[in-house]
Length: 283
Image (cartoon, rainbow, N blue to C red; front, side, top):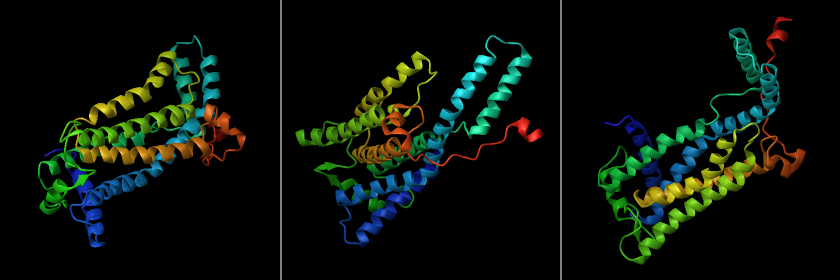
């Protein structure tokens, strides 16, 4: 039994529930469209549930941008001072500045939360592809999923090379579309909305490679996972692109190229109320 089994059962309930709802409306039980919509429902429900964490991430990026000048001045103030008292004072001042501007250490939480979901969904679809029922995804639905086809390709099939050239075109097309959309999102929406001020050149260079590595990883993974999971990735990429475009346009991080492009009129998410400094609290 895997530690991700409970999560796989939750995802199975979502897929099974969406499938039952669609078939109740007259959709074909083993139709590829029915199963694709059921998989898309997982994206909508999961990503909707993660929206509060996403908003938290955007707010944290704004808070970090507001705090950066103060942190830079603090580092300059304590430059060259390595005695224990100075180190403790600097760390205390950093915590105070972070608290004042509402910074959090959980900025990347939405991405970290999605990783076990991807793994659990992979195990769910792999088991279904092998004819194994999982939770509320019963044997009848697993059999129907095994017969479901998308543009002539079985949703439980693996790899680019299958039954003829059409198989290659469909599976590679899904993976390529996912990779391309992810590349555009990272390169033209996320990176321009990410502050690189005070970032070491090595880290900035690594960040510029992320779109290429992400796209390449999708193309490689597309050959070894079920087609249904590649379709899930494509739906997720569409959601991420739309969400990132909204943040890039209306809620850009201060001090980034995105903020400069859209000018000072952007609305931004409401910031947390500044926390009083310790000296003020003691006054």
